[in-house]
Length: 189
Length: 189
Image (cartoon, rainbow over all chains, first blue to last red; front, side, top):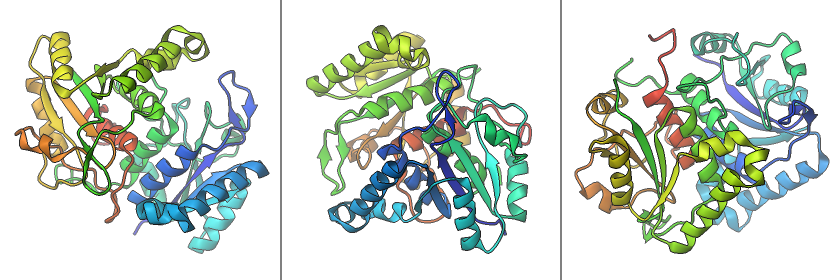
């Protein structure tokens, strides 16, 4: 019986294209796309992590529109997916919320295209037998180096077919959830 | 040696949430996200299929910005991904272009969440040993019924973990390309 899994989409500290640490803006599409993908794969929570108070207000306004207003009537599937979303100031707050939800100590797992020394999908699935996992995804050009100094495990990057590796974070989330969580198909079961 | 694979993102004829046939609008994010995912997985072409002349002009303006203007300097990885994009009026035009590129007869393969009688990923990979494949994805609420009357093969839908199945098309493309095209990992090779 695998433990619950949650996602955190990090908006600070992340890198820009020059490698400098920035706070990125929360985008409407990251909220909706990733919430729907998370809901499809049975993810327990989707945390939007931003320390920017103004960004928190924007997200809460978007959530309220789709969950209680005319948006909920227009698209109930979208409202259902958004019930997974929580806006928090940092990873510690996400871990605290997820611990309260699961009555266990969640383990953060880092993701990113720049690392080649990561855990395999199989090893990550095995970790999930032990405790809840919180997968951390960076916006912009990826998670800042400070995350990688924490001794948290790192998932192997998604490799496509060649040396181009600039997946949108929305696509990386979808691929990683499918690899970690999809039921085995008849051909491989 | 597998044959080349291409994608077509269909904007007409597709369904709206009531099941009526509509022409959907091309979105900026569908262009960029899917082009980057396609480039990562070595896809040969990404066709935006719309019969609306005004939409064609919008797409061509976006492509020109990122491929030749200040956008190309700002983000060369994005420019590289967009070299895969072609805007065509219908699936026949996409097939003709892809045939000219591959000197072969491409086979359209339909996708969608509503079908349960589809080809497995393994069977789809085997088809690709025979001839180039053009994967068709619907925007809005999916491909119109007329596509399914053509005797074209249909790929099995992406199943998550449960009965919620409302993946964004951008996520569905990413997951299907990963299932069909990713190099096998060490654990399953």
